[in-house]
Image 1 (spheres, rainbow, N blue to C red):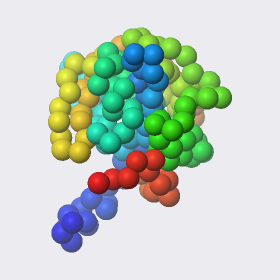
Image 2: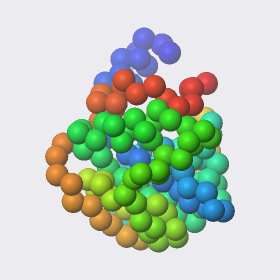
Image 3: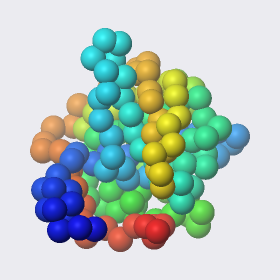
Length: 161
């Protein structure tokens, strides 16, 4: 990257979230740093999933995705979803989760979550944006949210090309 690009991107510190998908009898989830509300009325949200990721492959066939905010003290949970690959492990083993709308896996310990129906998929390069129409909301864990700077030590389960 060019120096100016490094300086700009290095100053960003977005909230991290765990995105889960279920389709064809498979469950998957990953730690995501590219996510944002993208419309006020109607409410829309977009999450960007890496094409190298198992969650992306499951999400291509899913009708809904669940998006979970974590608190800073949930670093271990962030490591599970960001540092392991669903190609080799079931990230949901031993976790408290329930099926939500469209079968999306909702994590029981999230600070906040929503399940959204997938409206559009947008190819953005090495990531695909999933534009979501929120269908259900929940959560309630208190505390400061996990940000990129809190998760910088997590080595990605899939390398970034």
